[in-house]
Length: 342
Image (cartoon, rainbow, N blue to C red; front, side, top):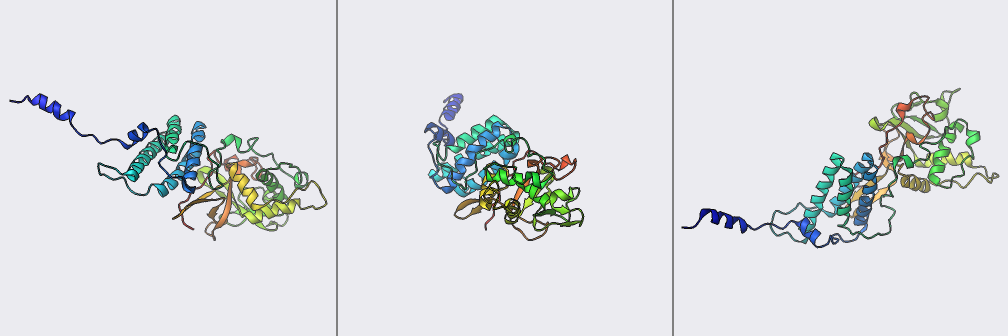
């Protein structure tokens, strides 16, 4: 009569076990599984910047990068994982990617900073570990919060004349940010409240382009100030109008110190590289592209267009509001990701 214990042990020893796709991939040396394309290159750089963002414990940047990663992964891992025992090559890729993506999301939710960086590094190996040129649509190199504006905010600007040509900074983004308050004070443009269309509540009229004597705005509207909840107050700008207002301030042909006019594309690119400008990731059937603006409105409920959105913490705490430090946004990196088709 057979020994029932021996039979049980023998049965356990001969149970077929499914080979874990992630373990098999690791054993094979983490070979790249995704073909190189514009989308996978964007994925590569988003994963590259996730490490420095987690090192800085910048949860805002980490969450924004994760949102971008999720949108990009959707383009290359679309089908659910098969339940069949024998996964094909595509099934193995999906199994590995979804497993790593789940581990990454768990680490982000728990704020396990070291694990976030490690999971991002492993996930990046799906695309490859070698360095490659960074395309214009890829996320720019991560910039810590305290390095986006140096010193922590721009100096207080109170008079347009003294600031007219005060900046000799060659960076178009920095130059635009330094000259914008002077342009508002000079009256080449004005800001309004996003809810009422009137003078922004509690703002210093002369510093947002409103003439105290007339109680009316000066010249063109360039944008608005709006309450963004936990992010504080943000400035929403109409790009062409805002750049024109600054260029009007510096257009003195006889003055050799006036500098060349700023361009909308040059300013937007510089602000995005500094991690100061909201951007939009546009997802289409053929891939993804980045727009250096957000699709929103200057006035709440008004017509939407592609606008710039900036945190008020760029400027001095009293630049637009007297003693209103609560108007200053927190340290969240403003990088908007939207899965929409245009």
